Length: 369
Image (cartoon, rainbow, N blue to C red; front, side, top):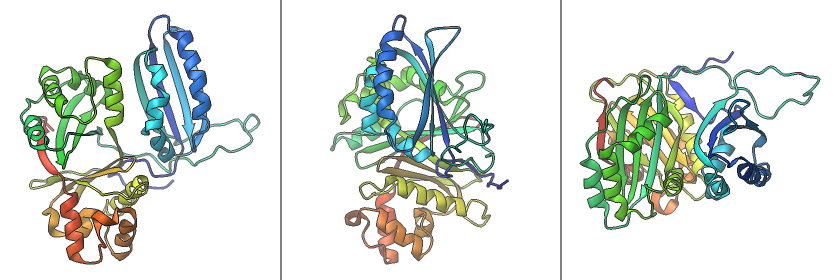
């Protein structure tokens, strides 16, 4: 068995097969309408690269409860599809049928199969070994505001009152960090327990709803949070999933930074993979000043959240996740040359780091986090 670093609790890039489980609660009487929409949808999903198979199941106890399971060769093709505009439009017909959904994603670690019934080995490989997590789920949302409104939006986002940290007996909010870069906002959350329950809890809090309403006039993408369909589409498009995480104990003096990389068109996934690999290589190096890191990626939006024991500009190579000439050359190929420059000198690296560094708006922790 391959030994994995205990500090790497999450990775979408280990090459293992992916099992996706989607739990659905349908509106009363919507079963036939839902089935017809699914029949049209499944033929489209079957043609997506990396898709292996899927199953639609209905509860034998409650006909309003349904389950869709799908298997993928690995996580990256699924993430590329599920976070695409194509997917948003594809699942739109299902929204009117569904009261509630929950999506769960798992790497396949072990399996038992019947060689007689399934003589051909499935595509993709198994996860090399179990990961040891820190019990915290990480997620981010990103959206843009109208140019010229950045200062006002920052003021609104910095001034809100923190919601109650305790969600239920097992779930609590641990940390919320907001950054801005130009007119782009990134809100990263850390949750102990159930992420979906925590996000719903946050959305129902009066202080949070007041902030969301206050920034509505400044958003580039219109939304109506009182309309479930409008809210669902907005938050689907705003989702910025964590694709890799390295955790560690945070001593005093550690500062959190977020870098928004100027990605070359079509290179977002490749850049996220490279950054994940770099953080993986230094995960068990006690001398490395990177205490923890999380790579978030959706299409060509790549954000790397890092907790550092040293000032950000002390080591630009380390901060950017490209230590050494070869990795810097790879980074150069994956970035927009008009923004990133040549990266052939320390000055150019420092300039890229300064351009990528997001402005911290607020960082809220639970009292016992």
